[in-house]
Length: 99
Image: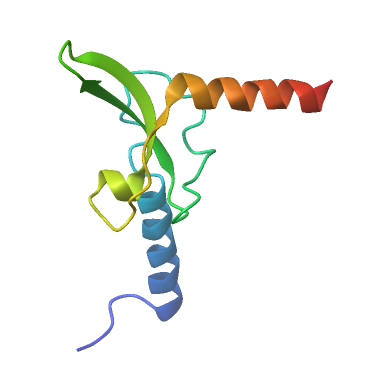
């Protein structure tokens, strides 16, 4: 079968698709997640994305960051990180480094 695109174009497109997959969900959140596209899963390396979930009897809502591989039901088993905890931690450490 004749090729439609060159090998170089194919490789470049595959890289773009892989990068898009790592940043899955970056533009879907209704809430502002400051670290989207900046933090990555320590287990599998995929982008962490914002998520809202309801837990418990009273269905309390929690805002979290979760691995995009976990969100897409892939192999990653790492738990979600509470949004307020991780953002506070990062901002505190940035403040310490910058002063």
